[in-house]
Amino acid sequence: MFAHNFRYTLKYLLKNRMLIFWTYAFPVILGLLFYLAFSNIEKDEKLQVIPIALVKEEAGQAAGQGENPAGEILEETVKSLSKENDPDRLFDMEYVTESKAKKLLDQDKIRGYLLLGKEPQVVVRENGTEQTIFQQVISQILQQARLSQAVTDSPAMQKALSGISSPEEARERAEKVLEGLKQENPNIQDRSGDHLGYTVIEYYTLIAMACLYSATIGMYAVNSMLANMSRKGMRISVSPAGKGRLIFSGVCASYVVQLLGLGILFAFLVFGLKVDFGRQILPVLFLALTGSFCGLCVGIAVGALVKASENTKIGVIISVTMLGCFLSGMMGITMKYLVDKNIPLLNRINPAAMITDGFYALYYYDTLNRYWLNIGSLLLFSLLMILLSVWSLKRQTYKSL
Image 1 (cartoon, helix red, strand yellow):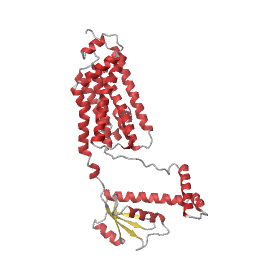
Image 2 (cartoon, one colour):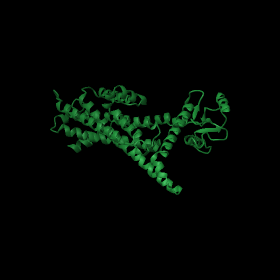
Image 3 (tube, helix red, strand yellow):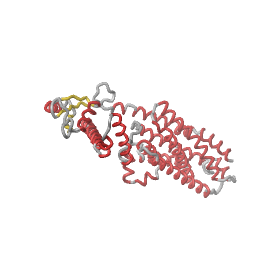
Image 4 (cartoon, one colour):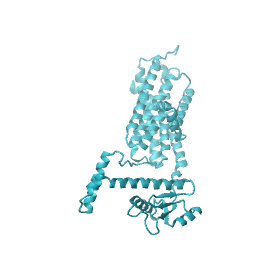
């Protein structure tokens, strides 16, 4: 009975043209629209070289030379960020006197200048994106320089460097001390990772929506088993076949149909639009598979629990899906933050939020703890939907067939 119902449900779903369009064609069309809308955003928003000036405390002398190592590191770093042949060049820097720097700033020929003294100081004339970037970059360089100096001046480092006989020995001892400090202080760690372009987040929400659109497939599969919705359902209702087995075979057939659509979407994104999912492609695929299963279970629950026409059920699924995607950030990433901040429980029971949160966990965190938490939540939610569907189908009776 399982194999027969599996084959019949598979044929029934693949012959439904409207279902095929929304499952296979619509996500691809929407992905193409995303590409047309977002493909040039990162290129258009690429930062231009920022014109700045450096002012030393004394002309021709590095400020605090020999007394202010942080200032020396700051100057050298800014110079390295201003190399003309560097494709990632950030600054267009020139050495000037303080009076000339003020004049250039007033004439808007530079965005600001760095006054190199005992206490380095950034001077800007107005607020703006380039001015803020300039201030933040200098602040970060200073923090790193002072941290490096603090480590160098630490008793452990001084003790390790005492009595050395060669630069090679000094380097080897310094590396050992730094390794020990990293183990003692978890704040001194290399947390750099493979961060993707932020437009990939928009494609994550597209995948989440495609996963939840599988609810329509699940609903059609259940309708084919209901006596008041199809002739097949009439025959099933008078048969001795167990409802649990029928639902399971319907879920399997629906899942195969959804996987075909998901495969087409991923192939289009990766090979057609050249969307780069980085090194996280396998976790992304697994989360998409889990999300699709959850979407199917939602559709099955709607088909079993909602006593209405097929069009009404489709309306319920579309409404629930779009509302869930909206709350999870598809129409604006800040919406998910607002919901998490004000009504956190809402996104805990929202499958779309679980899927997108799993993708965000891959994007932002260097561990998979939150990712697996969302996987578990999706599976638990799916199990609940399946149990409700079986319970509802077992209780359904008809006055006549």
